[in-house]
Image (cartoon, rainbow, N blue to C red; front, side, top):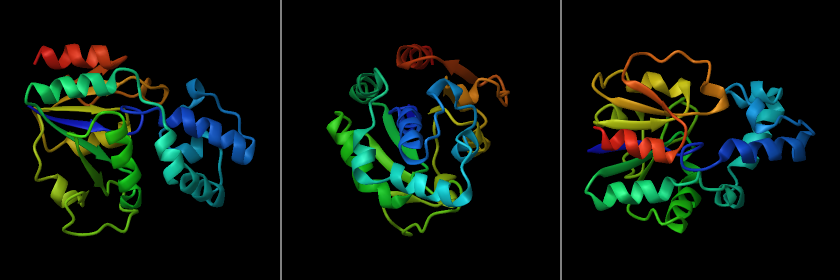
Length: 200
């Protein structure tokens, strides 16, 4: 099978780290469970200038490398790879974060997982024809059987794959969303994700 895996808040605990950064930078104390929106400027009540600084800080290499692994992620993914599944980690992080993002995967035993930076929101200066950066037209040529994703904002990127099974990693910002169709299943952890894939 071909499996799409989102990076932030599927593989690693990005939002928990951003919650700490918001306190350190702006004194904004929003606990993880109170992060109700994928749009972090809204969740942390940041103005445009604050949000830009906030995101720059969160994408500095030492910060990216410090993110904690979501429990069980690497074990499950390596199990898939050992059974011959084709794993693509696809992130909306800017391409400038590719090297530390790749290093994080390698440091967590995911050397065989492919990594792509996808220009999901048109806000990055991507390098065309790179092996590791994707514009949307490149992404839409790819095919997947299963996707692991946490962001309701990303669901629209699956509309071209009507048979795709989407495993939605349960997070505070997706608990009130309405899933587009019956192909979407909420999963509370990587053990439930593994079980869902085993049923396919």
